[in-house]
Length: 161
Ligand SMILES: Cc1cc2nc3c(=O)[nH]c(=O)nc-3n(C[C@H](O)[C@H](O)[C@H](O)COP(=O)(O)OP(=O)(O)OC[C@H]3O[C@@H](n4cnc5c(N)ncnc54)[C@H](O)[C@@H]3O)c2cc1C
Image (cartoon, rainbow, N blue to C red):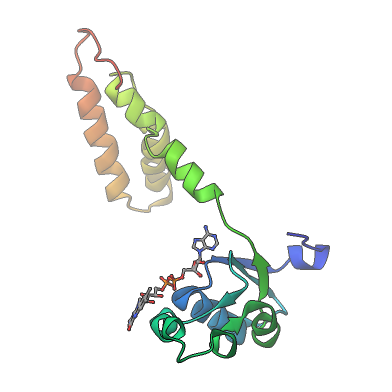
């Protein structure tokens, strides 16, 4: 998106869709934070916004959309955000491809392999004991998974679906 070195230090907030919710959001963010330390970006596939409840009046000819619509380019100058005209496609693709992903520990449990629970959560429990910080949730999770592992026999492991 053509970020300069100065922009790289800013907190970047990207809002996709400049409809009723998105336009209000970038306007408020821009008004609150401005451009100095924030880079607020609106990605919207249309050039202008019109409040949808007015569409039937536009269709009926009682309202001129050109007079009532908000042009993102001028609006963003006024309210301190940047506007990029375009359609986001990456999130849809990611959701399509990754919705069935199984985390590695779930894969281990399904395959009845020893998990990393003792290294991860058990390690936090031990560090907590050394530092005198109670870690009851980690202790419980580690104990539950350790109990699960102990219950697995050497019988044939089920296949991962
Ligand atoms: C004819 C009509 C009449 C209505 N009347 C009323 C009413 O009387 N009262 C009421 O409360 N509500 C009414 N509504 C509903 C109201 O308009 C919606 O609830 C409101 O617009 C939803 O706001 P939103 O920000 O979630 O989505 P929208 O306002 O629909 O905005 C979504 C924006 O995201 C953009 N966008 C979508 N996908 C992408 C993408 N991949 N990349 C980039 N941009 C993208 C779109 O172009 C759009 O500008 C009406 C709706 C219609 C259609």
